[in-house]
Length: 114
Length: 113
Image (tube, rainbow over all chains, first blue to last red; front, side):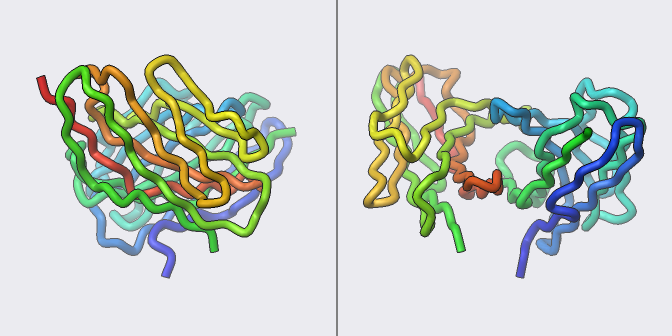
């Protein structure tokens, strides 16, 4: 069984569109995260939710809006897509928000904005 | 299926010592990338070092170097002259040609004063 899953795996879209990436974890974890990996493979944290509440919100454009309908899901909605949004987005989860809890990463979603 | 294994969940060393973090992976592919990421308590991920599988020479970044053994599918990270700021979680990661990345479960490293 996949622990952390993301859909879709690949997403190709036009500039200006609105799109969503979904993340689900079946580990019973309380905390979920979104990371963005750029072309140089740097991985930056974007958001973190604990029990559906936002706890980390790094400096990202407000076109990015995370939504957590329940603690097993953390979706990422992106409005008015720009070329610079092209990247691989990773979802992750951990048991709690303490830094000692191991994170489990999803397989990533490659977003390409044309 | 591709897998990444970090067999050391936690390690501790004295400041200024050298420490090696192990990582093994399994793949049937010939061309791929390997990474080590450092994660401080902020949960940010910092790219420490990367290695392309077609390159025989081991990658080096200042005090960080890798021992890449392609035949053995081993990719260990050596930290020389360890510093207190090196204390963090370290993730080994494998990426194939389709940009699918797989992370190990991490090794928590403590540098003791």
